[in-house]
Every structure is written in C-alpha cells, then in structure tokens.
Length: 112
Length: 114
Image (cartoon, rainbow over all chains, first blue to last red; front, side, top):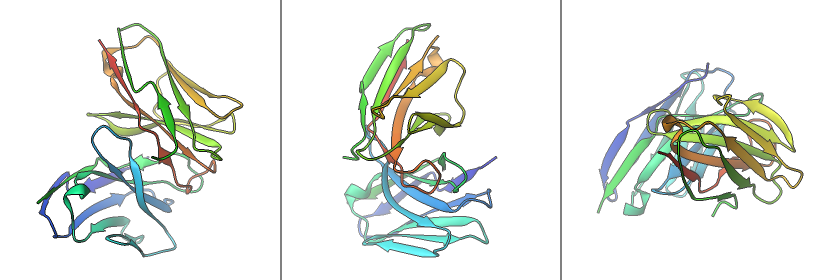
C-alpha cells in the first residue's frame, strides 16, 4: 500500500533562517502532492501543492520541489517567522485514488 | 477559514455509546472526506462520498458509518464507542471526486470517550 515518510519529526530554527521538510513516497502512480499546516486546535490548512508534471512551485516564502524519479518532495520555507510555528504534513494521492495519504508530520518551531 | 464547517467542536461520551458528527462542505464542493487524527496513528482517511454516493473506503471500522445527504452535508456515525476511538475527526471537501483536487479541511470534532 501507499506509504509516506516525513523527516524530520521536529525542527527548530531561528527567526529569519530557512526550514526544509522532506517526504518520500512509495506509490509510483502518485501525482498530486499537497502540504498542510496545522496550528494548535485547528484543522489542516492547505498551503501549497504540486503536481507530477511540475518540478518546482513557489508562493512567496514557501516553495515545494518534486523529484519523481527518486520519489521524494520537499517543502522549503525561507525567512521564517514565529507565526510559521506549527505542524506541517505532506501528503500524496493519484488521479485514480481518492484519499490523501499523509506523512507523520513535522513540528516546526521558529524562535524569535 | 476554509469554508468547511463541523459540529460539534467537542464531544465527550461514554464507552458503548453512539455519536453523530456533522460536516457541511464548502459551497460548490461535491465531495466530502472523513479523516481521523490520533497521536499513535496520525492522520488517516476513513471514507469519501461524492454527490451522495460512497466513493472510497479507507481504514474505517465496521462500527463506523457515514452518509451524504441531498444538500451535500455529511454525517459520520460512530457506535459501540471504545476508549481507543478518542481522536480528532476531520471532514474535508473538494470540488471533484477523484484524486488531484484540492481538499479543504474543517476545524474538526474532538471526541473523548471515557
């Protein structure tokens, strides 16, 4: 079955530094890779996504890269701010499937 | 605010009881997904409905069932509750019924079984 591994499980950075979270997946049919941010007491919030026909996507301070050959994708956050502190989840699915398979999550702490 | 609403926010009940969780999708979305989030299992897909029909099933126990009504809201029914069912239950919605459509999550229902 599908499996998504996410690393690291916790990440502490200084405000203004960059943060990188990596995920690997096993299903070669996967072609849609969203990232979610979950703050305490809230539901996961979609922050960026990438499809398999694209290698990189950027939205202001966040970017996602995808390497389909190696089956891994990464979230990059630049110029981190305290409000970036949250748990981040990667996920994957494919057109024939309907459910998202999530990674285990990364707790990001940005120290002011 | 994602536009997905869930009620109730919190639910405390005893073992053996039955509860119903409710979800209203974003305006225009036809598909509703239910996910369970627990400390040991992470975020796991339970079931999906698309325009009133069951579309996919994940790791959903036989004690759990769901339905989507003509107005597209959905209910998740959990029966014969056990302590291990304590978790956050999230509903998500998307425009389409297949993978690759953005899924937007509601605020969740925190279920505590005592």
